[in-house]
Image 1 (cartoon, rainbow, N blue to C red):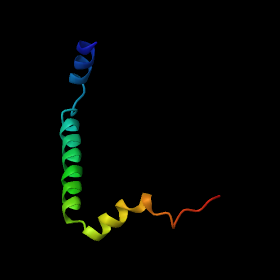
Image 2: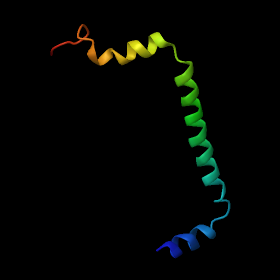
Image 3: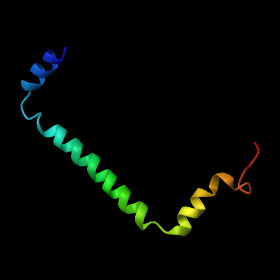
Image 4: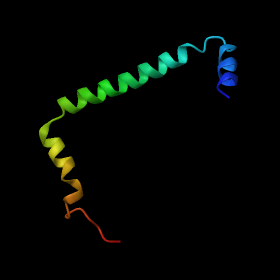
Length: 61
């Protein structure tokens, strides 16, 4: 099965760029997420973390 996939992938021109693109997207996403986590305001983090415990906004249908 792997030989079939490898042989098929070798016959496609320009396919070697797709793993590089996916790695760059993955890396960029996590770098941006890392920067956002360390630059987020403490008040925002605290308010978001308390949202599930806040009973004042619950509406019974």
